[in-house]
Image 1: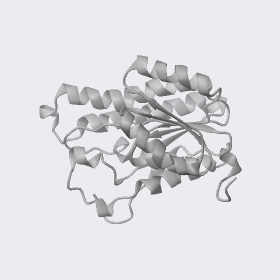
Image 2: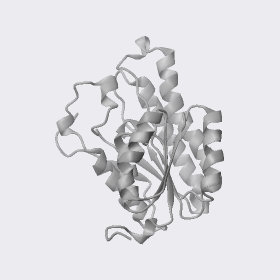
Image 3: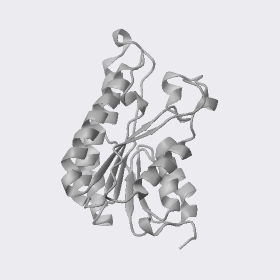
Length: 243
């Protein structure tokens, strides 16, 4: 075992949605570096192949799977394969997310609203519901919500609504799973330098943002905490200026 690896993650398996870029990819790298086995999902096969090549240096097991979290049958098909791959899921990272162009409610197409709600909220529900039978005491669920779960921004109604709803879902899930000893963490990162900004603020000041690797390390550190420790909300913000 490499010297920098913790025994905590040996033999463990994590499933990460939206794992091919941004925060999802950074979390995959951070967990793989600790020796955790990975199940990676994304909607683009080429991106999945690229992610696997980049993660290969960690020399841990990987199962890349195409999956659109918005589609119940796609999630069901994914977990048919997952159940054949592992009998236990130790970490679920609901990271898949979508945003829409900066448009006020009066201008926002319903199709754009629906895509964001179905990805950020319904997809989280579908993935979690499918994963729960594989999760045992000591398992951890991390839901990537963003600071938009507690703030509002003009022109981002669908995104903000999806994240507020996802926070309510996460808080409810935590109470339901507390008796089973499964921890549920609401990840609330502030502005992070990822591709999502291209959707609603292309010229955002990236130099003021956090790196995805910073968020990923905070997630791994939270998961490492003793099982009897509760981290309900993991809030990480840039320390330089405001966005």
